[in-house]
Amino acid sequence: MILVPLGSAVLGLALAWVALRSLPHRLPSRRAVFTTGALGSLFGAYLMHSVLGPGHVVATLIGAVLIGAVTLSLLVRPRSRRLSRSAAA
Image 1: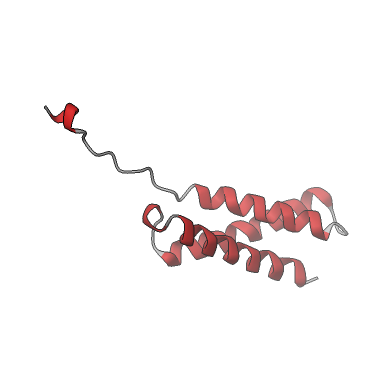
Image 2 (image 1 turned 135 degrees about the vertical axis):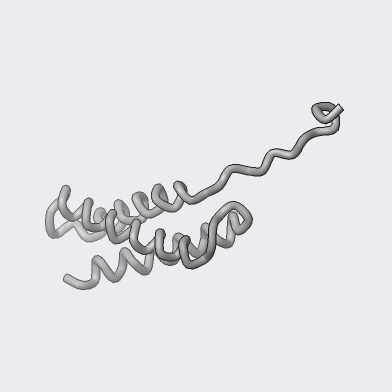
């Protein structure tokens, strides 16, 4: 019973760690990213458990990771635009 929320939180933290390793300059603080990853995956597990019902542990964890990834993608900042030399002239 406790393994699905715990597993989804651990997967969310792992997903946040991968996001921080991949895009460190385009994400806010580490604390915000780790919190969002864990809470997004917990929400995803809750949502998938509500939709699928009990007994679908693997599908619930997959859905938790997908919803956690979507939640983390909302934190990504756009690239900074630099003026090119032709635009500045």
